[in-house]
Amino acid sequence: MLAFDQRNSFTAGLFGIEGTPTAEEVARLADSKRVIFEGLQLAVVDGAPMASAGLLVDEQFGSEVARAARACGYVLAMPVEKSGLAEFDFEYGAAFGEHIEAFDPAFAKVLVRYNPDGNAAMNLAQRTRLARLSSWLKGHGRRLLFELLVPAEPPQLGRVGGDRDRYDLEIRPELTVRSIAEFQAASVEPEIWKVEGLDRREDYLRVAQQAQSAGRDQAACIILGRGSSNAKVEHWLRQEAGVPGFIGFAIGRTIWQQPLENWLARKLDRGAATRAIADNYLRMINVYEGARGRAGSTSKDSRL
Image (cartoon, rainbow, N blue to C red):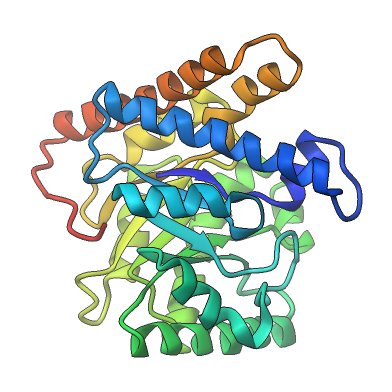
């Protein structure tokens, strides 16, 4: 899955727009989303598997892309959360269901920042809102893609001397497992857990085992890119590949950010930017599929 549902970080980080974009700026933002989608389409022409090639795009700037992707048969996921908040809340409040039904994505997606040792009241509020969403989706025959970020709490960072790489390696895997268990206990039941990349294969196994615990055999996991370097993301993909319960990835900025920045700076024309995005996406697929083949995996992806 090619992820480009960023909103706040897209407007401020990529375009330097503060506050509400003007109509002209919205048009530029929407066109940038189309460039990324054109990269995905080109990658499919060049051999990316249409059956599992998907995209994660927002309604705010990507509504045209979402409708086109849905019409063409791509696997479409769309976000439900307000962008850029530390605490999950619904982008469209109580009308979230109307927006899901209007676009009819294969997956409703949420991005949630959650640390089981974090603020207890905020954690409870998030679990309550997400249980409501999960129940609504189940009642309407729809599926949930749950993107879980586990930001470090200060005492946790303190235990590793402030080293975020050590936090990722030594502490975050267990917190990820605990977070999934807490959401499951609160009746939040995603079809797919989208988790931050892990450095050790055994940690992928533990995450998948929790995701599929207590008869949840149809639940699956994928990884996100977190805007990391090609080398880091490719390492995560190789560790993940072939682990039972893990079925792929949803990567965004690592694939499209540099080509898009070069296009915006007029260092690349539209065709060259599209070509670069397609090549980056295909490279990630090839890394994953190559490692999956070496791991001897023969499982088929039935969740998309």
